[in-house]
Length: 214
Image (cartoon, helix red, strand yellow):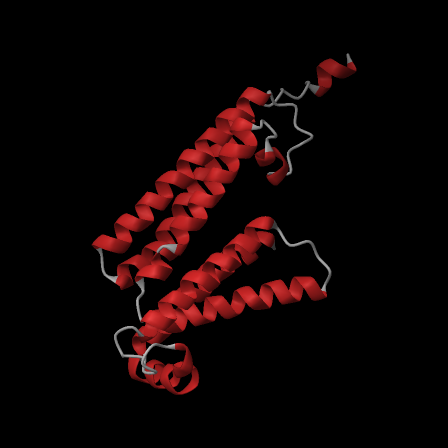
């Protein structure tokens, strides 16, 4: 469930953008007449309408997530707060200035904040927050292994941040949106599976049942 909630903003952005891209005039008309007060000049053009509409949807979702968790009295992760601040900040700039460049920086900033957090907590302070995040505190794995995994995630987040900017600045917005949906999620899934394989290789072997009974 948590994994779905983490990916929900990406899925919503993708779906909203694709709908807006297929209905640009309608999206521009709705944005202008409903949220024109939030936009410099008061008019949303057809070209930027899909991105601005998707940005509004994700910003609204972020607020709903926070309010819902508050009402349910559930603990809100620090990264969710960080994500909301980044979304509202960059999203607000994107909407007001009609400039999709701001929202394109969002994934990079989140990647770098997460990587920086792991660098401080796991590499410098040696608290191995990654072990807690993976719910693997009970695993008898040497700290050196967790340190290696932490470094791998730090480098992965740093690389993903750079890759996002490369795609954002060198390809059309539609390509960036597709990469954000399929490329980023695909690379993250593959990297996570690779981490699981690496971690399993360093777990203590389970004693053979027959030998134990003998």
